[in-house]
Length: 409
Image 1 (cartoon, rainbow, N blue to C red):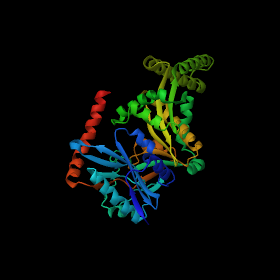
Image 2 (image 1 turned 90 degrees about the horizontal axis):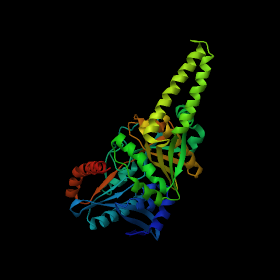
Image 3 (image 1 turned 180 degrees about the vertical axis):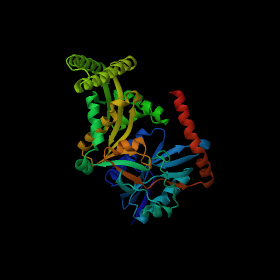
Image 4 (image 1 turned 120 degrees about the vertical axis):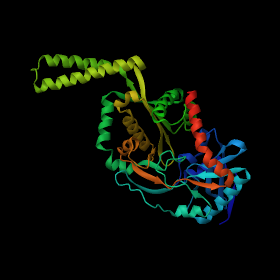
């Protein structure tokens, strides 16, 4: 092999290589780099006789005191079984970014450690991988196998649904039932464009407050929909509360008329009375919600993006006031159908906690997704002393950034 390191590969060459690689993923597409305006970007590569054999979209984060770090999200993209390519690429990568004054390189290869259904998934006591051993040879330090969803820059556990499994099994009975209930309750799906992206950003704020996490704002989602103008799919679950109220009023009238003709304390009478009680409760709820949110209200939203290999369901928000309407089930169903109609073989539901016992995991399990355990995160230290300062200080910086964001919202 005649390997040559390229310090600045063009976006076009990078995307062509990544899009045709079996490890292709959203984070390594140059369009994702356009979204990440707060980071500097550089694409480095390795060529063999003029043909790209490794490439990485590198995000460079400025740190205090004029320092910086490199983060390669879900990359680099290369054949990790080829030790010569791995060794040569990372050797040049370290030398290149050390010259630029970076203190470390953080990366998480898009390598699966294992995959199984939620019911059959078993955590490995002592996970091993040829890729981990290969990367140790280039001084990459594996960051462990934590189960926490937010421990690493990217989730280590994902929920993924294949088209083959979807066509063979569909969804669980509970999920199918909830989709029908959402439809029956009057929830409707509406696709939005850039002009209405503020509606989606507003919905995401509810999720941020409920989970006490920092997600993204309107400006960020605008960048996303601009960068992926032809491959994004943003939908809102809406509820026409005035229409629902009219329907409930009609139902109440019909039940009251029916009850008059029924024998008191009979089976049909008791059943109708229970239905009337439920209808009156719904009427009260709708009237209260109309007073707060108006006749038509956004109750949930989802942001999906198509890549060459999959459709990624990236962000979802839900107004808890309308939790009983089961809008997330309807949104996921719609996005999944859209995704498979786009010709992909996989829908990526995003991260779940490694314990697999939280509400988010159970929700995604209902769509018969598999659990994918990723190999995890690695650090390559370029400045040992400054790296130690980073390890102790960065978590505090992230908490402070979230606090400031909340104060400003």
